Amino acid sequence: MVRAVPERDAACAIAQAAAVIGDWWSLLLVRETARGHHRFDELQEELGISRKVLAERLGQLVDSGVLAKVPYQEGPVRHEYRLTAIGRALLPVLVSMQDWADRWLLGDGSLTASAEGDSAEARRMAALPGTRLPALTLPAHTGEALDPVADGPTVLFCYPATGRPSPLPDGWSDIPGTVGCTLENRLFRDTYDEFVAAGVSVRGVSTQRPDEQREFAKAERIPFPLLSDVDLRLSAALRLPTFRAGQLLRLKRAVLVVDRERVVRHVQFPVTDIPGAVTASLEVATAVRDFEGLGDLGDLRD
Image 1 (cartoon, rainbow, N blue to C red):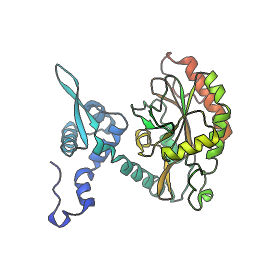
Image 2: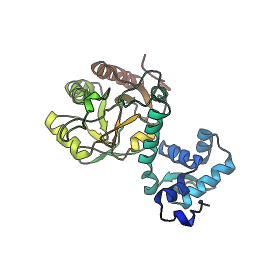
Image 3: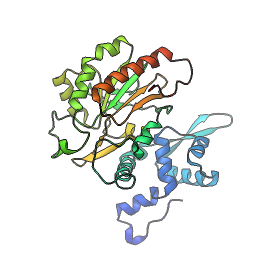
Image 4: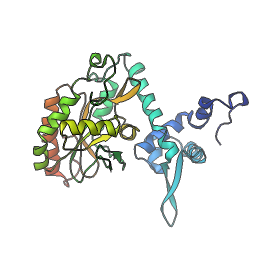
């Protein structure tokens, strides 16, 4: 059962939220379902949790409306656990917790849009190749909801924010790693024909709103979709590094290559050489295209 809230805290929303997701395992179950692990055995393997505790926590999250129990097999009936609208609304909370811990517990407290090569964020990103991106859609600047992964190799480049149309926060250029978002978009734009010729799709991703991305795309003649991770669904699914500026969470610059089966094949993070990252992403994505269907390609950085 969900923990009862004392009468003195009945009107406290923090206490009410803690009663539902304040438990260690409950938070990690939300994390794992956001990452695409939905079945009991998958969750047990990912978390190393006892079957008894797992069953209890899943039951609590279903009773609270955070998860929905959905049948995926008949005879015998088996269920998987999916985030509801209530559960998806928790994703910004999880990403905010991750951002806080990356900066203050695992880092030195510095505000940065980049990372050191031996940082916890860099190690987490380096472990992404082989990870399958769960099915999801993001609003695009074109007005439709799009899958981040196209029907073929896809380059996803994550960037903090562009300064058009909204002005960037005060001190933006003083934050290491923020400068270069417009340049990065232009470089992908200017080489887009090469990506198309290679059979590779390109997607830009930021946490800016679709209308902001739309105005930027129009002004800069961006030929590929810009996707808005304003609800942090992609960030939660891949545990992407973020930083907070102007009271908003922003994606740190990263470049990923994903194959048609939604498996991450290559990650570049941190990105310190933007032109080099664009060139490398085309080379790796072309290699993914050439070798798709031959089995586990691993991380094609080499």
